[in-house]
Length: 391
Image 1: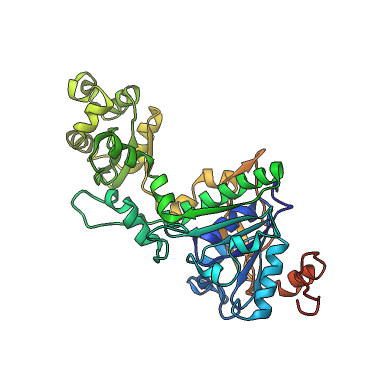
Image 2: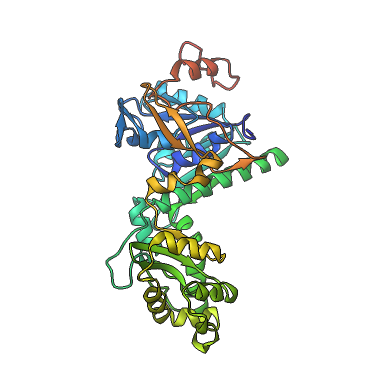
């Protein structure tokens, strides 16, 4: 299943949000050509763990791509970059606003003779506005967007989500927007400039929190693992650890009460609805933890699963990746790094007609595809006067 197999993407991206977006397109078959500086390339290439000289972090979001090296401050290489764009359907860049403009590679420059081009810019705050030229990273965007205000325990210090939420949510939005824009191009022949920001994406996935503020005028608060509108719906301490238990309606609440031998709770007014249970969740948590204090994690899981109540252990990543459902779906795949090192990676979680997208290219060595890509360009009709020798 490669619905984007005829689409060429030129990626001018570094580290996370942009490269992740590019990989999502590459997984769907797009020919993603990653443009990197000859001196070291994408900064993520230096991130550990390093296996046989190759970053496994870099490999995790750069599979199925080709790599070319260009110094965009050198006139000949800048001309090659322009030729690459002329040959493409999509340009993806995550530089700070103004950088591509200074290079003459901004959307308004390259779209004049290429009206079908889809050009996606990923940045911290957007391409214009009072913060557009400010720097931003996942940490600072989680802080500014409000995510850190609702993450962690109520009395704890500020805590970011352990997963780079702002980076990868923005990459997802970018890939979705590009795929949607390509449909518009196919229908009308008109390209578009997509402005994808980490701040906007982080706020957009905070729909429940922003709607809480809009509806009540109150800021959402930290609740640890608890939920503002459902209970029991959090991690509960048991004899040898914690178990996450989620009972999101009256029927499931009754089953959860059966699981701890406290069916009498169902008839009590203060626990009669989701709203009331959430208002009294501290008391409800104490009741549940008291009843589960002498039960081990496995016993609790067996009991609640048997009752049809959603529950889960607090897995480490090694445990999560070893789950039988992960194996059944075929999500963990072997991956050979350029130096020959055999490792594993997490594949696309999407399945089409029961099949997961295959890997058709290993993550590239820096500049691995220079000869191949620039030879292809020599035959392209929009070389703007460049000769095959100059490419």
